[in-house]
Image (cartoon, rainbow, N blue to C red; front, top):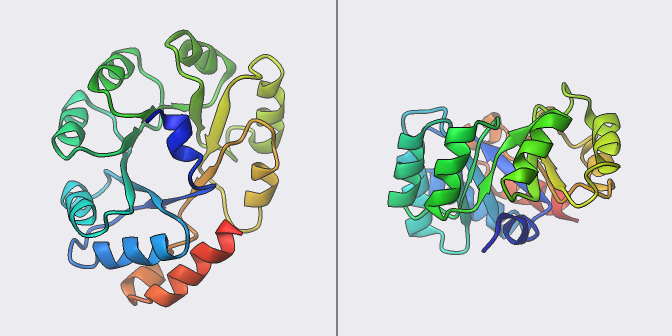
Amino acid sequence: MKIRELLNQSKIIPVLELDDVATAPDLAKALCDGGATVLEITLRTPAAFDVMAAIKKSVPNAIVGAGTVNTEAQIERCKSLNLDFMVSPGLHSPLLKAALASGIPYLPGVSTASEVLAASYAGLDTLKFFPAVAAGGITMLKALHGPYGDIKFCPTGGINSDNCEEFLNLKNVICVGGSWIAPKALIQAQAWDDITALAKSASL
């Protein structure tokens, strides 16, 4: 499955920073029950790969991807876990080459017109726009639509319940990513029903 097909399955992508392997499957199930089935687990904690393995094993309907993929070694770990997709915060030629060779659907981050062009030359038509709000937000995405009308973006960074609809209404936005659907306080409280409710609300 290509990255655009994958992202089409959920217009809100929870971006999760998790360090508790034991409760990760419960969180993933709560999000999936609310319609947020595409989950990005950032590689910002030592437990991230174990978390993804636990979710893959216990929640078969979850589409599990690694975020903050910055090295070729991390790509190899993603391959060993048979992850569904990978996300990077930026665009780097050697990493891009390794990611494409891995066969795993890949979403590199861009924030400039030049980076979009470089990604396009590599054959990619779906990109992460990061950090979305800091990099120009709605105005920048509208500007990029002119010269790059065939490119779709997943804005991440500064997206929340107040501005997500404005981003989703743009012609070149396929989905958005953010952490507001599963805030740390609710995860720590194991408030799974509340997280399911947030996911349902965001998926409407």
